[in-house]
Image: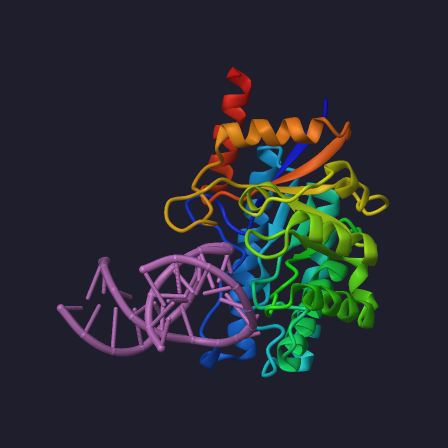
Length: 292
DNA sequence: ACTCGTCAAGCATCG
DNA sequence: CGATGCTTGACGAGT
């Protein structure tokens, strides 16, 4: 039977703790960045406590941990001032919490954009994400997860451009992981890209159900060899437009996903619960598992 | 003291 | 062509 370790992201269920505190860009100054950072740091530590109490094995740190860090107006020497705090935090995580930390930059990070400025901004944003994880001193299993990007009416061309751009900035391969999305790039397409680039594939069950393709989950897990425990995402449909995440995870979705995972014979996976009610959703799921 | 619209960034889809 | 979905959170204007 597969051991499934769970993960949550960015905030707790009532929103009282968040690693995404920010401010308005027009007020950008070192002081404002530092102010938000301190709140994010404080909340992050509380969230790590929460994860430890509830035996949560993965946490996704919010991209706004240091707000506007990749913005052109963010001055270069500001980041150096944060360095000692991040290093200290990294030590604490290693000694006290022993949790896997990952990140997932926003939808604006697009490595296959034909627009040079978009690509440039994306690279800068990824540099910032890598910087954080490197200074934290987390292992290579601390991945930075992105989607493939746009199709621009020529999906094959868009895939080639993604591969070319990652090859061009090959340092990205150290932490970059890619995920199938709910509309454009199916799991089958993402697997091909992951195999070509030799980077891990974060399989998203909900996106796969909305954008299905023929896949071999075992092959998807193989992209993780030497890169840490395979990571997957689980969410269920919410009210509103297709693709919206639900407040909780549908138990049937979990059961069929678990069956799919177990059929590969894998020993251990990390499952990120992408539900709006975060640890409450995980609690509900675990309660159902106990009574099941 | 509150609610509401807007905010750095891209893309595709739906009406 | 404008609103919406994607980690939502902050905050100033209006009530």
